[in-house]
Length: 264
Ligand SMILES: Nc1ncnc2c1ncn2[C@@H]1O[C@H](COP(=O)(O)OP(=O)(O)OP(=O)(O)O)[C@@H](O)[C@H]1O
Image 1 (cartoon, rainbow, N blue to C red):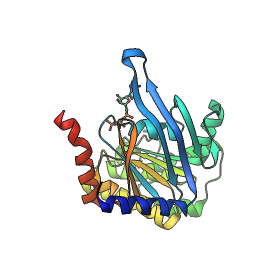
Image 2: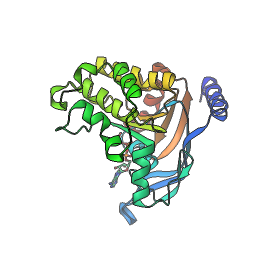
Image 3: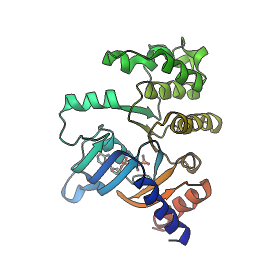
Image 4: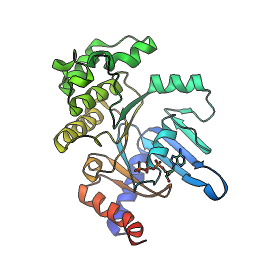
């Protein structure tokens, strides 16, 4: 590890001490199968995600990024350990309470957009709040829609929108309820570089301008460079943590982490 890495880590701890914690994993493990077929997707991971920050999770394929995000977003159940979301220990919540927590306090953006094909963009954006029986704040709706530049697309169905436009609709849907955390799983994985840059600029702005907390899994060093902090996973364990990442630093680190596999 270089002196710069040490300085960055020290800065990371200092920054995090000043901030509220939006989500926390303590001793989180997830295994699949048993005996000779046992796979440890996550092994005793302890990590905190600060409020009002964009945190990226990176690592080689199969390193446990999706598993960590899914366990922290109450989409999957860990084998051991504790997850605290917005002050609530979700580990022992029953299904109904977990569904409510996901609906009321979390937002999701997926690589494949996951819009309902039969609904218009506007109906997709308000769907989670409509299902929850919550009133949509019209002023906030306008702010989100205008920031994303999708006002003239609100009456269109997903198959009438480009990939970038569909992902902007998905971002609006995620932000409309002002969730405690937005979890984004490869949000730019299906997009070209221009549409990716637009989505990432929006995620960045929603943190800077609206104080949104975002945790994003990505393979892309350029996407990670929009984050306040990058956490690196290898074989189900956190191996590095970089604040204010540049694309060059992230690229170098990812290449280092991939090297043992390439050599093997
Ligand atoms: N349902 C499952 N059954 C068995 N093994 C699984 C299952 N889901 C994930 N795994 C294994 O757990 C490990 C971590 O998977 P995970 O999908 O979290 O990795 P990832 O870092 O998100 O990978 P990628 O970048 O390729 O999406 C991998 O070895 C994977 O094969």
